[in-house]
Length: 106
Image 1 (cartoon, helix red, strand yellow):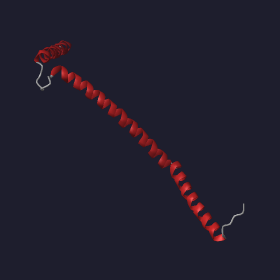
Image 2 (image 1 turned 90 degrees about the vertical axis):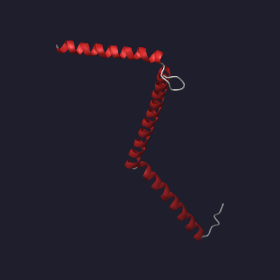
Image 3 (image 1 turned 60 degrees about the vertical axis):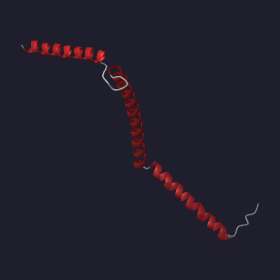
Image 4 (image 1 turned 180 degrees about the vertical axis):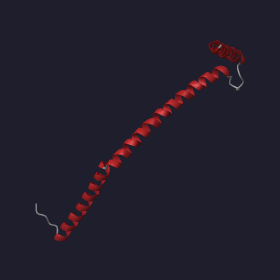
């Protein structure tokens, strides 16, 4: 098959191909540049940390909501039948810790 293009068309085609090749080489150069590689690695790590922190936040929020539901009713009022015993146990533990600390000093 014979090439029927004129010399000007061939030169224009060569110019276009050189421009495309130059763009491709520039893009490859940017992709393999150390700053680009480091930036991509940082972005990937940041994304993974954000994802992990987001999952941890959801998990903690769920646990807090479940614990809160044990001590507060649907209207937001405290459930005294559950709050009072826990408060008494907490006061007792603080008292025991204070007594133990006092004995160690004395």
